[in-house]
Amino acid sequence: MEKTPTDQKTIVQETVYIDNPADEPKNFIAALLLSIFLGGLGVDRFYLGHIGLGVGKLILWLSALPLTIISFGLLAPLIWPATFIWWLIDVIMIATKNVKNVTWEK
Image (cartoon, rainbow, N blue to C red; front, top):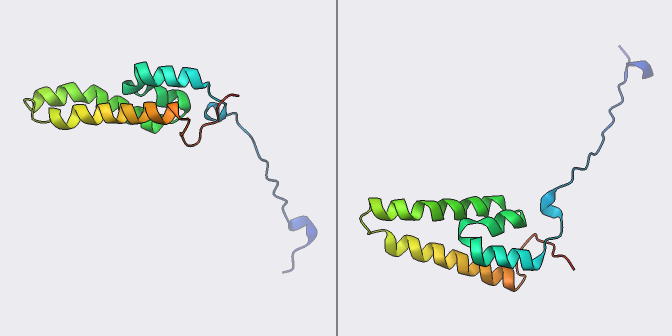
């Protein structure tokens, strides 16, 4: 059985663009101040649109004290320097504007 033109269906693809707040230019001063004062909690990464890293920093920070208490201080030499180093690296990266997938305001 041969198909006629009336048997054919036309598929139309439509592209929908959704505004993504992560793509908006970020204020350098705001990002740097957030990183210095609230960077340990991941607020700087949430602001920059890096939600996964923000959640990771927040979980590490919030679990540091309970893990230190539960381990009777044995994990303290690992947990506290890790939170400090991660915070310090992020402050340096933002201060030098060396953060991937971030567009800075001019």
